[in-house]
Length: 272
Ligand SMILES: NC(=O)C1=CN([C@@H]2O[C@H](COP(=O)(O)OP(=O)(O)OC[C@H]3O[C@@H](n4cnc5c(N)ncnc54)[C@H](O)[C@@H]3O)[C@@H](O)[C@H]2O)C=CC1
Ligand SMILES: O=C(O)[C@@H]1CCC=N1
Image 1 (cartoon, rainbow, N blue to C red):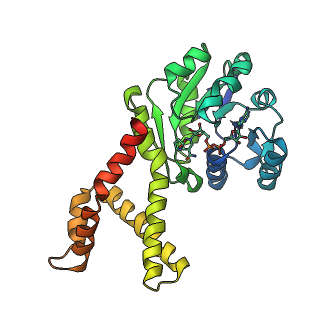
Image 2 (tube, rainbow, N blue to C red):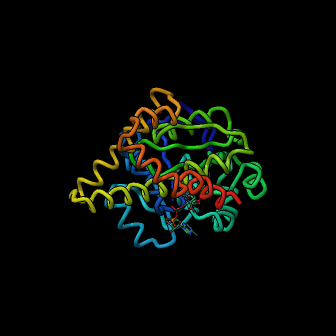
C-alpha cells in the first residue's frame, strides 16, 4: 500500500511513520492498537503533547518517539493523526499549515468535518474520522467521512492503517456526527453497564474479578453473535426468554426502568 509523501516519493504501510498530535486517551489507544498488530512498530510512531515530560515518560516506556513540538513532529512523519481536543485543533494546526501540505492528515477530533478542516487548512490532504476505545485491542470502529481531500493513494494508506484498529465504516458527511457519537461514546455506556451488572453479581456473592470477567465476556460474545449471525437483536433477546422463565422477569424490570429510552436519550443528549 503506497501514498505520495512531501517529496513525491511513495510511502508503504511497512515503512510509514505516523505522528500523533496529542497523546491522551485516544492517541494512546490508537498507538497501542497499532503496536499490537506488529504491522507498525513502536519506533515508527511519534507523538507530541502539551506536557513533554509526561509524554516522554509514557512514550519512551513503549518505544514511541516523543517530539517537543508540533512542527518537529510533522517534519518527522509521513502521516499525521490529529488527536487533540476539538477546541485546540485550529490553534495547533494553523501554525504548521505549510508543513502539512502533501501529508495525509487523519483527524479524530469530534465535530471536525471535512468542510471544517478545509476552512482552516485549505489545500491540504485530510480525512475526518471518529474512532472508539476498543481500537486499543484492534476491535474498534472507525467512522470515516466519505468526503475528504486525500489523494487516492493516501486514502488507501490511511485505510490500511485504520483497518488495523478495527472496522472502518464510511459515512456521508450528514451522518458523521450521529454515527461517530454512537460508536465513539458508547464504550462509556457499555462500561457503565458492565460495572452495574458486575455490582449486581457481587451483590449476590460472585467475586468481583469474576463478575467483570463474565459480564464483559457476555457483552463481547453477544456482540460477536449478532455480528456473525446478522440476527435481529429482538430475536436474540427472545431466544433467551423462556415463557415464565427468569430472563423475562429481568427484561420486564429493565423495561419498567426505561432502559431503551434511556439509551436513545443518551444519544439525543449528545446530538442536541
Ligand atoms: N476519548 C475517546 O474515546 C475519543 C476521543 N476522540 C477525540 O480524540 C481527541 C482527543 O481526545 P482524548 O484523547 O480523549 O483527549 P485527552 O485530553 O486525553 O488528550 C488530548 C491530548 O492533546 C494534548 N494537547 C493539548 N494541547 C496540545 C497542544 N497545543 N499541542 C499538542 N498537544 C496538545 C494533550 O497533552 C493530550 O495528550 C478529541 O478531539 C476527541 O474528540 C474521538 C473518539 C473517541
Ligand atoms: O466525549 C468526548 O469528548 C469524545 C468524543 C467521542 C468520544 N469521546
